[in-house]
Image 1: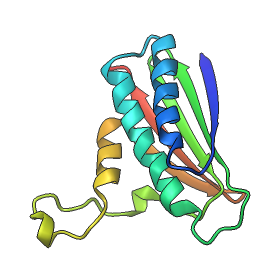
Image 2: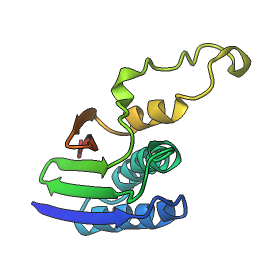
Image 3: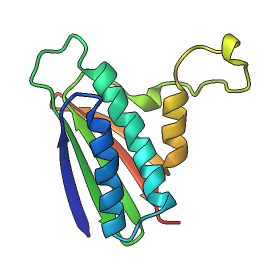
Length: 138
């Protein structure tokens, strides 16, 4: 099992570095190609939401850390931040059967996140948000 850690500044410009890092870690662990792309998309969405929303009105220091744990059958990604509490699983999925003008704005990114990975879990503790994403190799 290989574990990798990355600390990010709360700046949207960091997303490019995040994507490169995820793809490199996946490739090194033998999980390249579509697997890496899907994981990178999910983490792009999750980290972008943290950067845009979690720290509004919050005093620094702001912290964003990502951990990737590779196992023989897949990967567990854990996103940790010290922003405002937010449980993405508490939101109802958007009704994509409605046209854009009849649908509430937002929520499509979280829908994408759930489609890119196999399992999403959230917990809050010690002033931190912990978003756990699991993706199986199959």
